[in-house]
Image (cartoon, rainbow, N blue to C red; front, side):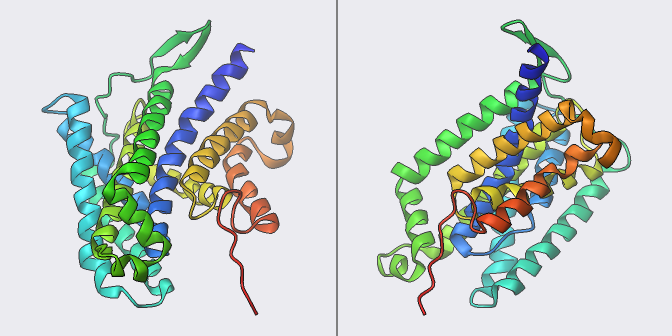
Amino acid sequence: MNEFVATVVRGLGNGSIYALLALGFVIVYKSMRVISFAQPAFMMAGALLVSYFVLSMNFFLAVVVALLLTALLGAGVERLALRPMIGKPVFVIAIITLGVDIVVRTVVNAFIGLDIRQMGDPWGLQQVDVLGVKVDQRHLATLVTTLIVVAALFAFYRWSRTGLAMRAASSDQEVALAQGVSVGRVFSLSWALAAALAGLAGVFLSTGIGLEQNLWLTALKALPVIILGGLDSLGGAVVAGLSIGVVEALVGSYGGDLHPIFGGDFFLVVPYLLMLLVLLVRPYGLFGTKEVERI
């Protein structure tokens, strides 16, 4: 039982990272109706900035400063690379975000180098006893922080004027413009939030194990998450991220019977198998808005 609880906590920790990344995807999609493939780059950029700032300041202060700069990077990308493309086909804009990802990651990798950069986090690989179960402190920190961020994000969308404006723009941009909402500002803020969330995910992904160039591949697991939860559902992104993290951890720990057939790393493909199943049964996701076409 102790091993099972520890596995679930580990899954929730990893799932929290997936949820943070997926939230960024959903926020951008709700505002611009385009999938941003630049999230891996923002994830790496945020973690890289923390690894440098932590050399001269407290870890938590370094995270705050790094996330602010990552948010500015996201807003700058939207303003310079994507704003001029408004009105163009969605496919074209998606390709541009892919190009942004490649460019930013190339620059980030040059600063990371070949060695693993330590984040200077206060957790490392230390464990803590929770009700008689040994769990990694970094997984608990990731889960608690994610829950706080998600609660703040939902409160922002529910009660703030800016959040209401973003909801209005995501529902109908023309009506929002008629009501005085600055859609351009909504676009910039959406990209800033998405970049900051990705940067935070990168920080927690790198704690304990350090930052290295191939960590960006983890961001790809956010794609099954948004398919499972729904492209336009913030709550779905959170639920799907945590669920996929737990399922992945359980298969990795207890899927020994599958190993002789599929190999020891079978748990790595579990998110994508879930994505395929959802696409076959419910293409708009478990919590996504079902599109109705009238003929």
